[in-house]
Image (cartoon, rainbow, N blue to C red; front, side, top):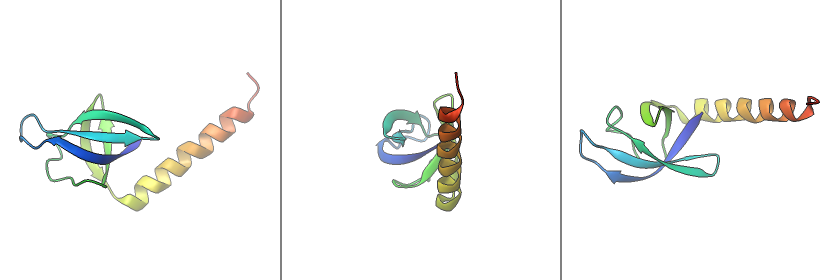
Length: 78
């Protein structure tokens, strides 16, 4: 799931860290792989590490797809 960078905590190249928001939930994420990312950009995070910056339009498409899947899942009887 794409997350949006809210703010940088540490810009050290080795220990870079930022706050990233995922659907209203904020997490501290290691940013050493994407040191040039800026606040407001979307990143893909795996195991607490941002692995790439995602184009904003692609991020919105992906988030819309997740929302649609969530709505379909709610319609399936458990």
